[in-house]
Image (cartoon, rainbow, N blue to C red; front, side):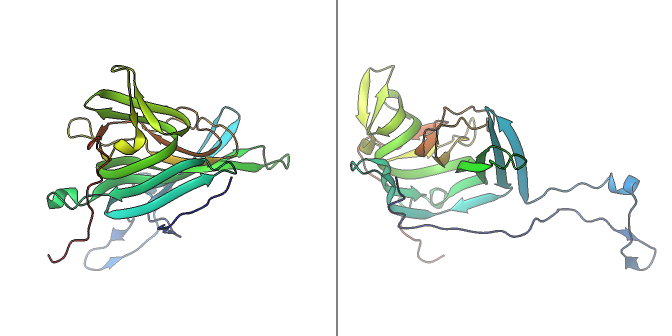
Length: 259
């Protein structure tokens, strides 16, 4: 399996952590910095911009690097093809992925993303010399807004609420969603997009995209335990998603001109 095509990608590398909150003392008349002892430092609090958490689960070690930030984004990716196999099948084939839409008011032009993260999976240990990377995932702690999403094939776990009922897909190279309540099926490319999150419950909390050598169950995130991610590329998104339509019509997302 190879990564055949990523026609548009954005990467940002942050090389330092910022500690919020400074420790200083001020004499009468003229401010100056001075060292603080342990007792004084214990009363000073701050939060790192980057947060690293290590977890062990199911025989695997996980290292998650989270960017503690809120981001608003308006962007469109086209022709996203991941994991092309020799038999012509594809793990993930998404014709259009748009964050935000331009056919409604300004509030819908962007999608809000909270706490994006990378998480690496390892087996073995440095002590025994058999340490190796099994794979990784990239995800969001929260995502809110309208996402244009025209899917042809998805390997992963999806749950989308539609007028017919709750539609689900769990497996490799799926092209359809099935509804247990309606006893019906819906082609993936009939979903023109989703509204992530809602005003009552908040953001959608379990979006991630992984690439793995073998099946792995990732640690629980935001109190949500994901299904096992299979080998290859895998998309997980099951929380608080409502279909924008079932006509396969992706909302436009053209740049705003003027103020």
